[in-house]
Image (tube, rainbow, N blue to C red; front, top):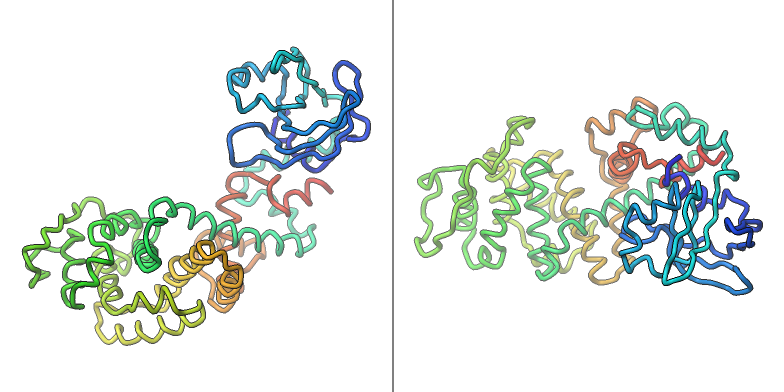
Length: 396
């Protein structure tokens, strides 16, 4: 037995809420099972309501395998647990005292559906990359569609939250500049590109002509000797990054940092950040990027492949507009982001190949991003209980 399973049956109300009793034999009527706390520290379910001892109670619910785990986990020393009104355990082996009063406890050992638990355990122990791949065909496709929509929003929210603490004090143009830099670096070199933007903020580069912008970015990267980036005024005194911060392992030559930094410097010099960040909608931004990067492609060393442009749109431009929608509380802007994703071609990587082997093919970037998020945040972590598809299979 695991706490995760107890969370699951409580959340889905697979217990006789109308006929529960405490270990003292007192009836407990659950009016609202609460909100599952999956991301914050503290009790497992917030804002639950119950009728107990001739009164209606509102508070938190905590769950354990054994009652004594309350003390084993140190909850008796944590003020966050002072508002717990109900303890739900698999096995009751000790009374728990909170605020000088015995905490009402429900033991669920005798209420567990053994067949259902065994079914859940098979999922939990699945060693396959996608735990439900053998049973996915049993689920109505609408459940996967709903989960993909949720996964896309989760992916954008997660990407934005990862950088929000660093970018929140910056204006929109500076935020966009940072998103673009990280996208040029991809996952392998996102951090070095971010360090580069810290060394050379957009507000500094905008004071320079395009040639100086490009040369300063190339020189500060530390990837080229100073003589390869001539014409820089001595007054800048910008500290170069150490070459060792850049990674090449697993990259193909077109993605080597030396190539990417030249492309990035040309992109920054050619891009109208004010126009892109402040005045365009996502579809207009796409047309603008296609137009000005097409002019960049006249120089062989600066060529942005169609694949790279697609990556920039998916990993920089659209996350930026999602960030902007949150900053402006603009739900329509989020809608425009999702609509554009449905028009972009899907990515092609090892995760999507795994989905393809079980017959799940991405028709566009919206679906490919959703499938990547679903795999990374749910399938690979065996979080089937938080997935619409997994819940449907487990719940029958």
